[in-house]
Image (cartoon, rainbow, N blue to C red; front, side, top):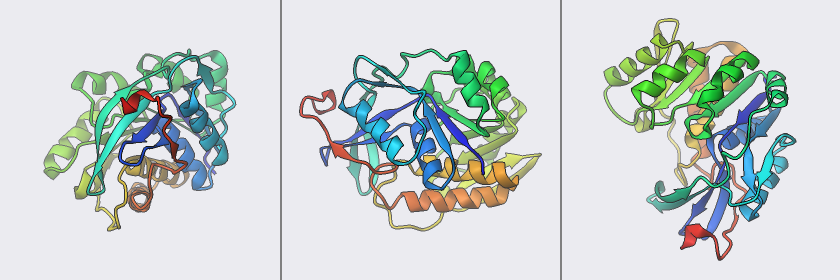
Length: 276
């Protein structure tokens, strides 16, 4: 059973309409959702010494995620203020807090090497350390989200086994061109999610398309991370790209039916800056 390490970014998603905050961040979500799927999972990163940081660590521990190598630093945990409209989300403001206040050590790399999958993202501020992670990881995965640039793709893709990108809805040809570009830079498997238009993967010179799975949408936050989680575990275990895309689509649909990426909501402290 593949063991996954999420490394880097964390945040609390502050739902302004509810006055509640949920643990999140791409690396946190993928680790937590891996554990929820029954896989051994760990998370390494840095949270603040505030209520939000405690919430993230407590939620991960409740899901069975190993957080023994997490750091806590004085200051605020990263946060994102989020509004909701018709089940979809929009971002109001954010603060990175202390999440970048840590150093990747040799002990962290030894810890990473004990995992089958190491996953990080554009938000993790680890791009300059990817060569070291590449050397330690059996499978290295990275989420570019929708905020990639051509220079970032060129610099990061050579280190990756699996690259995830969000391209939004649009023509198949545009998403296929993007996937070819990332593969040409060196990524072994490239997955492009496209909102309501589904997803596609490019591997070994072949494209595979996957439609979305119909669902009752409560909250879309975390759906992309749920897709990534299921894809990674299925592909790592079986090497079957079409089946991994299907698994990702089904898990993303399921995740849309709950609040937050993996629950564990708590009241936002009255003095939290997201409320000001």
